[in-house]
Length: 318
Image (tube, rainbow, N blue to C red; front, side, top):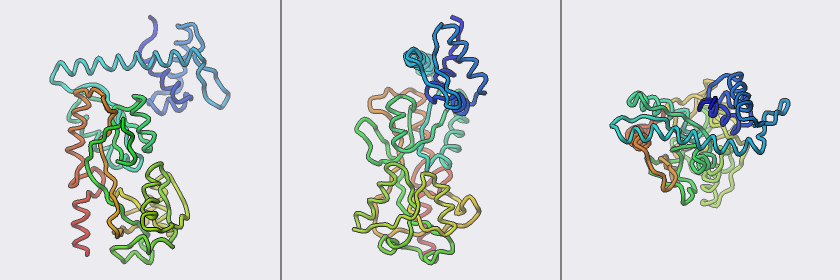
């Protein structure tokens, strides 16, 4: 056998992304290395794995589709050797793929993953960001071992262990007429322009709050990127509703944002550790779950103002 697991890893990355460029970004390997690995496999196996489209990436041939399934299975078995080894020793080691919500990842993932790998030097964490639907799909297709997501419309095959509740609040610019307030209601906001976080399930969560109160929001703009929304709000385009509170009150352009409490007792979003129901948890996965329980709670969340501190600051301001 004149090919390696590394060749297969490069092939799988290209097969799943449909692009040498995207595969290079995904696994942090140069494009020529990936192209060379694919050509080597095609020569060694005697089959064409991809159809090359000029300026439009790659598409798998029928043989490529079959070999992709086998290659992924073989890589999974190889990775499981680390799991088997860790189960027979006291050492936590191996590779874990962690998914995280787009809205949470910039704050939570860097500290959470770095501190875990510092505690367990033989462990490697790979992170993937996505919206709720993408993360659930990743768990189902075994692309993710575990995910940090919200308790929004979870299917029965996804098990969520709740970590912390994040109440919704209102975000406005420092020059907004309501910026001097401490609390505001949805009724008062219904005629104001709303900059809506347009992510699956998160979008429905915010719109349902208006529906519950018999109100219709005036949606002025939408974006799937939280930093775009924060910057638009800071520039006076309107207000937004969010649950995540970064430690910084500045948008990316340096303008300041003001947080207002939302009256009405609306349901919070719960951050939790999600896994596929019935999955056999390795020692590595169990260690990561324990680490998450330690680092994410009502009193502390990496990169964020936790609810307990947020409530205390609100009482002092009030």
